[in-house]
Image 1 (cartoon, rainbow, N blue to C red):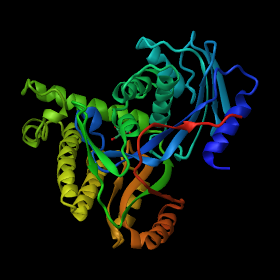
Image 2 (image 1 turned 180 degrees about the vertical axis):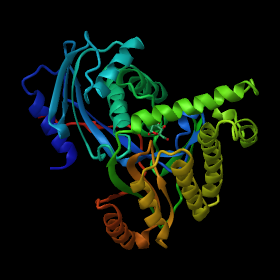
Image 3 (image 1 turned 45 degrees about the horizontal axis):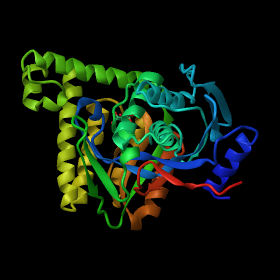
Length: 393
Ligand code: GLA
């Protein structure tokens, strides 16, 4: 049975005794990659993400009462609650409840609903399954209750759910990429103005390959917040000299070299990484426009080095994956991707070298870490969308 048929069948199975108002809607909400521009989103910088062909799939149907019945199919868990009591449960259900709560806070009229979801995004591998789920729920609410919201409004509500209900102070990149993705394009997003442009990803004969370190580092959320605070400290310090500075987007290397390099070396390194990463992204976009993929690949290596040495959000396993990739003649660029401390590396690999790259990295990674890596070759897809109405049971 294909995934959509299974989704529909499982939904019917889970909710057959209940009063659903109609047949379920099916929604696909993708995970994301980011080619370059890491830890820049919450510093009002640039990112270059895309939605991928790994997604959360939701079946949803409005109820005639105020109850919320959710099933996380892959976890084999279910949740029952009510619109009248929306408080965090500190479980997976918060990704759904948080979006519901934000829609209500935003004044949207909704009733209860049933939702069953499954997915193909490997959990905890840094491909933003949580943003995909939140966007999927928001999209579902908009469709079920005909709220008429635009995508930007919905993705902002997803971010608010994650920031305020789940309690993770993430930036806007993941929700933006998942909701706004366009097949075969990357999104150049200015996280200050939210201006964005689609750039065709013209990389004939080159694949985007993710190598999963299979490390799920417990430090990710606490260190993420620490990095945010360090960047904010740098901005506060520089503002005393340059009142026009409101974020690291307004900061130059000269400012950092003059005021922070010798007095606050740690803050200097964090801020310098961000300022340089924004520049790498702009150079990278220019390289992509002229089809210079090898120049782009070198910028990816530079990004990794900055993340590992200056921003210190890598881990030995991610560094090893990038080092193995760098030794392979068919790889144009590689770096860690996302928040860090585990998850995946992103690699640009020549298609005729895919097999030998796969063999090399699996073998070498095992030899150096004792761990297995999984490879995912991704395609760039459209953002969150309705799949199709299911056939009647
Ligand atoms: C996580 C966050 C994003 C972004 C990246 C780092 O994926 O969710 O907002 O900050 O880390 O670039």
